[in-house]
Image (cartoon, rainbow, N blue to C red):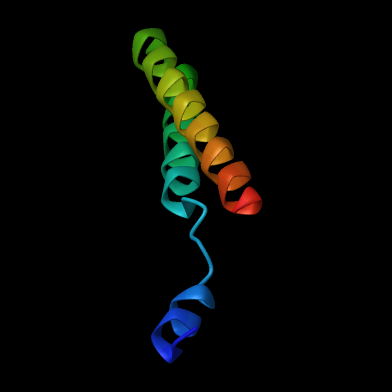
Length: 66
């Protein structure tokens, strides 16, 4: 292997930490909206948070396998 290939092989894959951060933000938004009585916004925020957590978990598992 060349030095460039070895350098690229040493870079770890990112597991999508941004997805987890946004999932936590939407979860907090859902909790605050639920406490304030905005059930529609709370439901949508919770749905988005759930999707982002699933995407994060899929990317995490893929990065572990590669």
